[in-house]
Amino acid sequence: MVEGIVGRKIGMTHVFGEDGKVEPVTAIEAGPCFVTQIKRRDKDGYDAVQLGFGEAKRLNLPEKGHLKKVGMLKHLREFEASEIDSLKLGQRVDVGMFKEGDRVDVSGTSKGKGFAGVVKRHHFAGGPKTHGQSDRHRAPGSIGATTTPGRVLKGLRMAGHMGNERVTVKNLKVVKADPERNLLLLRGAVPGAKNGLLIIIRKSRASGA
Amino acid sequence: MKMEISTIVPVEPNPNIPVISPGDTVRVSIKVVEGQRQRSQVFQGVVIRVRKGAASANFTVRRVTYGVGVERTFFLHSPSLEKVEVLRHGRVRRAKLYYLRRLTTKAARLKERRVKEERKEG
Image (tube, rainbow over all chains, first blue to last red; front, side):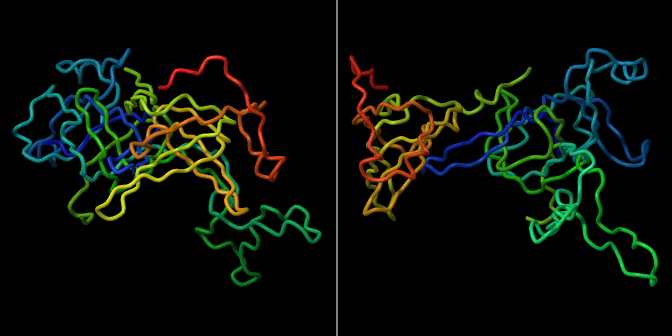
């Protein structure tokens, strides 16, 4: 059993419960994925499964060689797996592995915000808007003391590049998993833009129930 | 390969909900569950907003009770929405009637729009 799947974010919508309660859900086109490589402890040092997702138009020669037996796949990602001996190269993996009520962790690349100021990036309050202020509205304020220590401390929160980084949202509830349409509905939001690549992993036991 | 968000959650039109547009005076019946009992609650007022969008489509009804303005938003495809009756079509010139919020009594009235043929329910 592979413990995860690769998918693509479609967008958000609503789902109605029978009692009329509305659940906000993110729709994900998850899978079908294919096993492209099985890594073993004796050969690779650890057990894992590499899954491929999405049709590739063009691959370079090393990629073609690697995927010779399974076909042209665009995105390759590695997952933990149990009972690794039961898996075969080229085996199909789809959302049938999840059922309603399961908990999953989802990783993706967040939307890039460019060079962001401190108000947006670290939720600073900014300066006063009135009382004769000029140029202080979104300023960070003091960034340190005087001669002692005479430098700015490392790790101080300042303006800089924001977003476009890997973000993981944990413990999302599976609202629906439809293997026929390769559709996965998760309650709540998921990192990244529409059509962004997502990695969905069954919630690990270690992270608590 | 590419899936459209509007097709993700299938929505069937509710046969008890006619086409509603801003300015309509409607009577909305909502299913309310109180403990074990289920009853129907009625909310009557003017539609001040209709938002489209597959499963997310909704509309807002405004009424004034005892001098207090009350607005309720209903999801068009919610299973708890029992029935919607259009009592009167108002003649309005915009899609969102937020301006009604600052008008009271006589000024907040809408002229009736007579429809030649009653639109098909559903």
